[in-house]
Image (cartoon, rainbow, N blue to C red; front, side):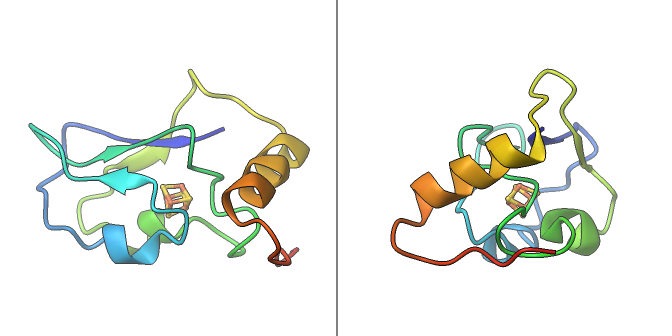
Length: 88
Ligand code: SF4
């Protein structure tokens, strides 16, 4: 499932450089995660980078976008053609 950013976001921008899928966009009233690009960091990292760096814990699982690990890996492969995913 993709992650989402809650209204607790203070728009500090700490998360955007951490996301190798370029899924986090600066929007109003706060940053947003594009579910078409979020893989929960499957393919890149062992755990979700935005969750680790967010100072106000505003990155949370998006229950409206549930996906299996295989589906997340397929999404990653489409976003990074020709690259080899890191598997954990
Ligand atoms: Fe990007 Fe990973 Fe956060 Fe999804 S969980 S928005 S892929 S940093």
